[in-house]
Image (cartoon, rainbow, N blue to C red; front, side):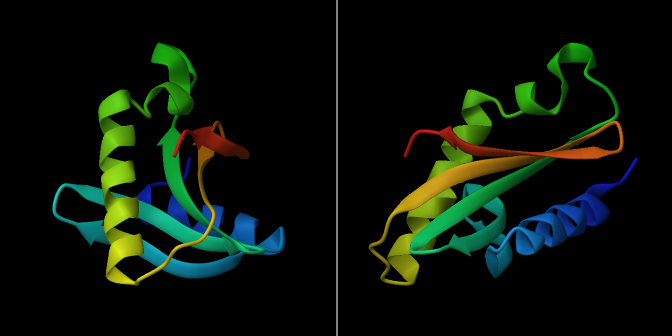
Length: 110
């Protein structure tokens, strides 16, 4: 099982291997944080990396609670405003569970 930074690095490597371009890591603002920010063509993608040992208690996907989604959304809005960006965005998740990665696209509404 990977831990913290190793899971984020594995997720970044996976996304880069699938043609996305890394923009930022661990973007933080007051009230929110985004693990990875990548470009997918003309879109900016905010990526939450969640790691769990098993699917018990709903697994990695279930750990992206409504509260967590709100904090990610807040951080994304802050990032866009700070950088003066107005382009298509989406929210993805990379789940690290049981030694494998799963990339879920557009998991949250904007």
